[in-house]
Image (cartoon, rainbow, N blue to C red; front, top):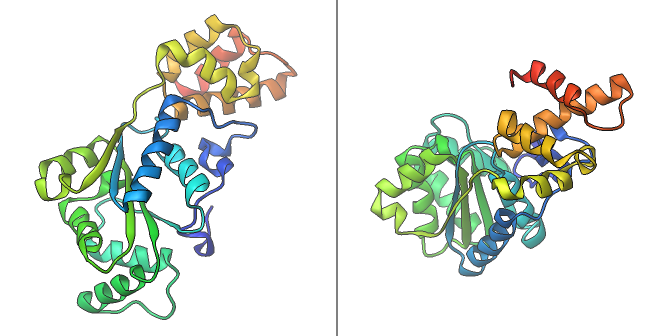
Amino acid sequence: MRTDLAYGRLPDEREDHFLGLEAAHLVGTEALLTTRDNIEAVIEAKAMMCAYGPAGYGKTMAVNSALRALAPDITYRLELRSGPTPRDIRHGLFKALRLPGEPPKRPIEFDALLKNVLAEQFRVLVCDEAQWMSRTGFEFWRHLWDDRHTDIAVVFAGGDSCYRVLRREPMLASRMYIWQEFDRIPKAEVRQVIAAFHPVWATAEPGLINAVDVEAAHGSFRNWANITHHLVAGMRKTGADTVTEALVHWVYSKIGGM
């Protein structure tokens, strides 16, 4: 669990993997490489970007990985929960930026403080789980970014609803420099990607990897991490050193798969 001291920082790579899966590797997929290129462009332009798609397809990991490489010391992350208001965003930024003292009570004073701080040096602000935001939440981000004194790039990472809210509002959509959609791992790449993702799959039969993807993983990195976590536990208990169909079906019994 992250502490207050760690709030706003970029997590390390292992924290990014679902359930902190040990020995999991970051795989250089097309989506991951595209994300790095896109974020590099957003940083250079001091612009805004929206990375969107269904849960579990690697948005957060790709964004965090790119920022660890490109801007580790100037990135500040917010993880907002359901229905955040501008007040929630203000307080989230206050905490992420680790500002001293108590937050101002009046919105006008709070906004002035944030704008002054965000004018001091260039920063990358990341709003994760952006699908929870309403139009007013996005408008607050636009308000900060539009200010001629602030020096920021903003990256939104969220579900499809994040995309729909932004696209419905021309004032917001027109300010997005880059839109990047995340989708499931392409079927043609599953065997290669998953064999590189974790050592237990490196020697697995290609047909078995394909079957697991069709029956339970469905091209989702989060699903693959969950399956792998159970599989590693099962192999540890049974002493098995390779993935077998019987072990896979034991995992299915845990996750409600085939």
